[in-house]
Length: 69
Image (cartoon, rainbow, N blue to C red; front, side):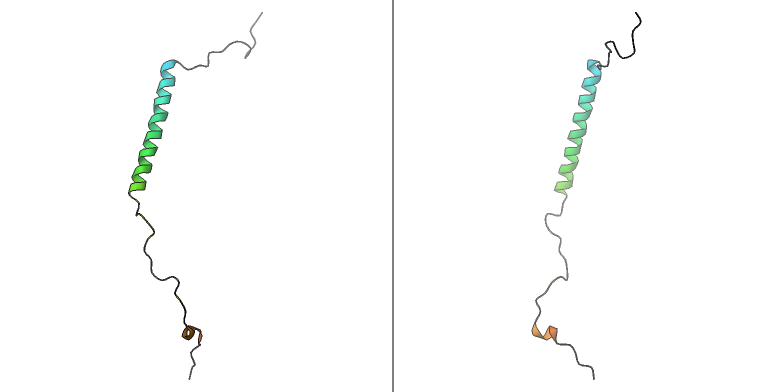
């Protein structure tokens, strides 16, 4: 009897060393991303930036249109 493709056991498992290497690379990437997040967080300005302009309270004089002569 001839074996049919895909019907028998296949060796798709990674060797133990390759799995550990993949795990260590993934862990290194997570630690590196966390470190980058800490650096960005600490270098932040620490609040809302100062700005000029914006809203101001209006008085009655602000609603009077100037009269042209």
